[in-house]
Image (cartoon, rainbow, N blue to C red; front, top):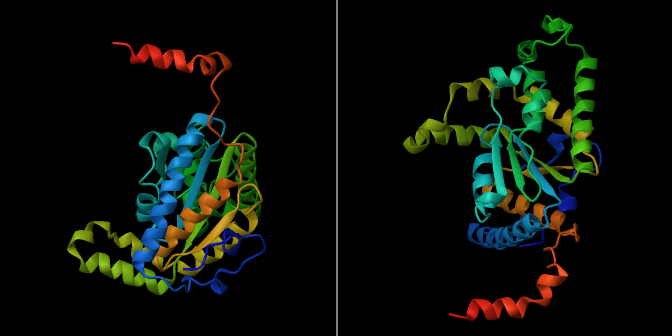
Length: 292
């Protein structure tokens, strides 16, 4: 299997989603993909232990994608070797009444990772310029000044919200959070097949919701707003990566490999050295512990 280069998936110029493949043509069977993923999992787990001890950086992994794009299974498989104390997963659904009493970024701020830890946002702050673009009536529940009807939501409103998201990411990056954003690029046909499997396989029936079909009807609108958001918010400090997602095993490996390659660039992440007094007396401490 050919090597995965993060640059092949990173958004650095304006993109058109319809021109980007949802499958990576690569000669590898599922066993080889799984083997490659296992090796990267182990490396990331070791790195997280060192990062925890270093205690200066945190890592925010953002996952976006249409229903059935594989976000949940990707999280399970990519991060399963992590020490549980070092990774936290947040799944952002419809805002609660408490969350709606604050600005739309508040619930994301309070979920940011502590130093030394990874946080994974399964659906993210970008829902506020994706779902709400497709369904602008949802904005009304935020009870914002001067927004009394959908007609009050102007193009400037969305422009300002994109700017606010960029500022949010710039702020947290400048304060030690490493941000990587992944869009799981699924084809409409593959989504149809996955929804059918949820209906045909009894053990997966619980995953199906009629709302999935309703949202599928807005596919073209979602693609339009995903494309716009990605183009306007992929920055050097908080880049987007577009991951072909029709092949779940391959998408998991690609995401894991990108995280590993990007984290390697932070060469200052090292285990802290012992203070001089402790280092000098290591043999003494060992001797004391050896005594019965």
